[in-house]
Length: 461
Ligand SMILES: N[C@@H](Cc1c[nH]cn1)C(=O)NCC(=O)O
Image (tube, rainbow, N blue to C red; front, top):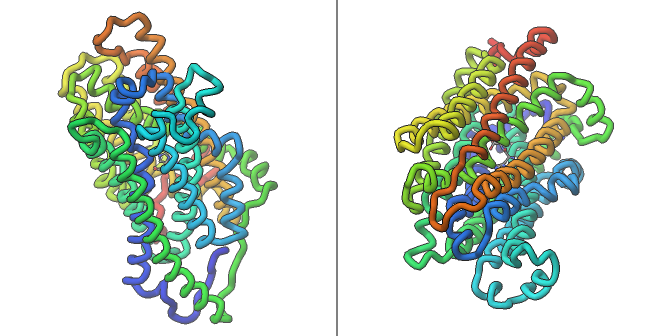
């Protein structure tokens, strides 16, 4: 439900109140993104201690999206958000996130792996897969549902509090906080395992952090309740429905701009998030970094985006050029992955490729997300974002699984202790980048034909 006119001053007109709300939900997203990548720098430890193959690790990473894709959870999440509102949906799905994260933690504990609750059952079928992997996958799949729907809810919260005010800045800052969570995960997770390399330790910390995130969301709920009460009492406020409708989906797929932006989203993000799951191990295997430092190198990526995304967002707000910038971002993606795939394992190349990727990962999200409202009418925006994330999740499910399988098959028969060769998995990422560039090119062509105005400034004078 969107507020289209507020006659008298409300709590959202108070700068400190709305920025405080942004702080609570941004912190929540920081905790969510932290847990999303908490296992990424631990791939080597999972191989050594848990006996997970690279394919198993990829299957685990892809399990994040399994329920989102096969059970259409993002669509249901959108419907629940429309029907039950922000406070219920947010609280419920943050709860799911915590339950999933707890299962993920439990899978890594000695208690579980020494025959704890559920071990014998999970050991009784699909015996090629370790019980720890199956339990972790159940947890991560639940967590994936929770964090994705929490993310959609938070976007809705930002619109509710910032519409007609500093909305782009608020969205940019929320994204920067979320990337901060990624940064902490990549840099700190290997250290948190301690000298005795206990994998469950960072996960326990992650679960606690998520609970604190939920408490922050409760604070948001109190503010939101007050805002709703003010809106209900103000008879001059006109509310318009923006509900998810199944019929909207068919209309969306008749829109070439929507099809192209969804394709760009899945191709671009498939070459980024699944890559980051393997990137710390790539740093160890190809560039010879110590395991503890490998995550810090990958951490350069979120650091760069935290600074650059709001800057590029502000540029496009004023100057436009979003369609061209999406092409440039896709081109940089190809450059970066080409360096990882084909250039020698020199640490300088690793830094250079990560910095180039940081630019790509700042350009495309900063241009893509604010472009959606230019292509889709406001009444169908909720459905459009839900569908785009749903399509994106197909890539987030398949590509980590593919990367793991390609890595294993490319390194079959490798001598014990020899470094893994990442050329073939990285060629897959280059391929995604090329496909993203082609789609970005067609998006620009269609933009010119249909006049979406993607290259025009977001802020109209
Ligand atoms: N699907 C979301 C959240 C996410 C983070 N990691 C995996 N999924 C998303 O892509 N949000 C936009 C972003 O740029 O983070």
